[in-house]
Image (cartoon, rainbow, N blue to C red; front, side, top):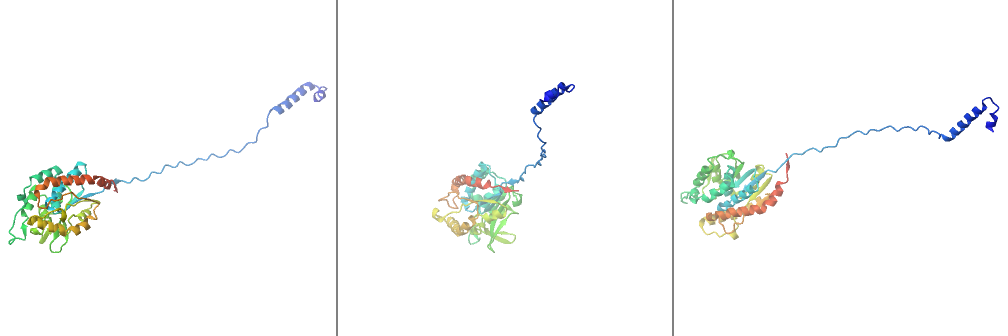
Length: 318
């Protein structure tokens, strides 16, 4: 109908064709969707990862507390040898009586093998200077022991040792323990080893001293005071039921050990680890069993190594 109406108009056919194309185009082109707002781009800030602060650590300071026990003290050498075998070196040492002798020798720079050679060559006559009881205050004067120590360590003073070392003696007047850390090492060892009735008291600076075992048979507290954070105590004290006191000297040493038992129990309770070499039947005057004592020290320390390694693994902050 529309096309017929445009036929009469000049050029009507052309207008009809244009109108038809326009209608067809409107039917084919879809309507445009209205513009949607573009959401803004949100840029998240880059937060660097948080690095925890680095805590510097160090192994704990190990202190070796060596107890008294006369000839049984050879066992200390075996303990030291076993520590050396696994690469453990104490940071400091404290010793009482026989323990002070071994501690001083080791602190002077003498390794375990040399300690053993020295022990096996030692002659009792080198450290025994007998005295008449009616003329002296002990069976032995103790001067020979001091000479032996001084010669062995080349006269070193306590403060000049390769490792810090403390030697415990007892003030005869006050009954208090005194830890020597400076001065004549040989004289300090002599005082620490002056078992009453066996050795004469030792005068140092106007004060008389006797065996350190009267105040601490194993110097655990003293090692702690020197700065030890882990204290390895070596107890070589004799128990009465395992040793027969056959001679006069054995009786004196056994009596002294019995007197120190209660003190020893209290002292050892504060140690982190206690090593007790098996020395049944070996008296304090039995120098013939030195090799057995050294081996007993090795075995006891070997058995305690797992526990010691666990303690040393507990590192401390710098």
